[in-house]
Length: 439
Image (cartoon, rainbow, N blue to C red; front, side, top):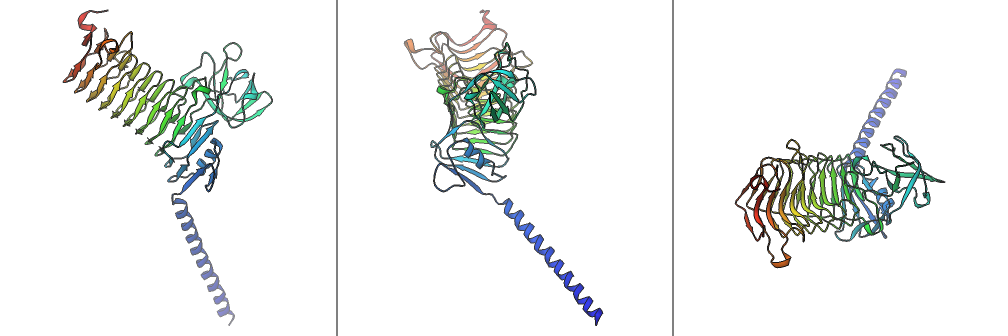
């Protein structure tokens, strides 16, 4: 009898443990399945939403809730930005209402650095600390380290008396004694770092340049900015009025910019650079930027740039330079830019932009009262091809500015020019200093 009772108890425990294990596996499976189901996180300025607010703090709170596969929907309205909206994970979509979801940079703040700013430091003593608040994005520079990757960027974690505490460290020795070291609250408005497979769509990023006199160039920022990202899409977005570049992506691979507009920026409309192969920019409009509409910079290779309108930029429509090779430009309209439509920057033969192909583009009415060119070639680039393009000056009298179709500077490499339609150039469709001996 005792043996039978003992056996019954043992069987009961075995069955209980088995049932418990099965329940645990079911719960874990359900939890894992639930965690993998994509969800939508909503931000609105009022009403029902996962996060309610109208500034970068609310937006970042929502972004930090995202997991791969999720979508962040930002409702209509103007959101005041004192720091970047940083998308922290891969595989997400950030969506707004086109023309109605506006991320607007707040008024700029600046101060000289009194102490701090040595390499590795994360505390800065300022002359005017009252201009800054915790949570602000900042950039740190001096006269010798004022642009490119020499500029440090960080977020303020605390302000105590005259000292800023940062979440990052200085990446240079900034000369605060004689070199005018300074802090500005400059930052990209919408950004991502080191992620892949993200989409930005329907967002307007406004740099509010009238209230932001200091510039953060495209290596460290832009109205929309990607850094070390892969397979990302920027679609139906607007980048405007930024004191720097509109859309900038650096050290990236396979970034697509589709049906976007970038204008009113103090540097470039779009800036694929620093080793960013396989970019695709289509159906965009880059206009009224102070320097260049589309700026290829330092190893922008194997890209496709098609069906864009690039017009009324201060100097160049398209600028190509250092190792920017093997790109295709087709069906673009490049017109009314200040110096020329397409500019090949001066590089040695080894470092030039080789094997770029231009076909079926319209290049017209570029230049100003002093000088004007359709295509201006400085470097010794090889295997450049221009075919089936329309290159012309369509106006007459004092309105004529595009005086040359092609201008090849002495020392420039050969350019294949075939089957183009050229007209209206007062000084010649093709002028080659290598053949004419002109100086």
